[in-house]
Image (cartoon, rainbow, N blue to C red):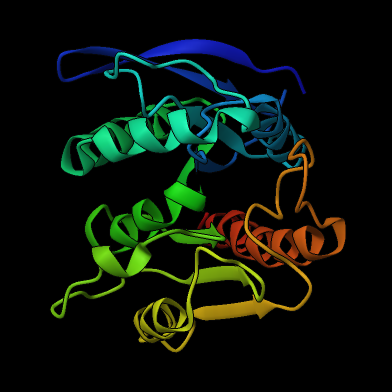
Length: 236
């Protein structure tokens, strides 16, 4: 399923995004919050795969306001980390809200929306579940998610969070804190996968990709997304 590049109006301008949708029929919208390298080939491929499964999938450039706003290679890790540290989280959450509105108005969207987050994107998934009224969320090897957890939080939708057991970015204290927050709802899922490290979801990553663990993680995320399609059909 071929996607297209679009612009979405936001505070102070417009951000660029990649969107892919099914040729016909309606399904849930899915927002992909990328890793720190941006909307790269892997991310676009994920959007295309989701469109093939009947979803309207959008991945936005969260770094569009930064002086260093383009897609970066995995070899440019330091540069990617530095710009991620410069991001205004509250402002970016507002951008995410705009992206959710964008997919909801798409003619192939049934009004339900899930947010998927990779690495840097994990915190956005959690906060969107608490603050933006989304219908499902999935996080894959999220980083520093516990910093976004507040004592008064009420998670408003099912979540599935996934980490690799060998992820150097996720020490045990972080895993414990995120597990507690995510499983506060009875339908919250939390998995730590043996044999996987950080970034295991990305086929183009020079090291660390695990097809087996990525497949298991996708299965759980697609189950949540599939339920949104089924729930809408039942309501109609």
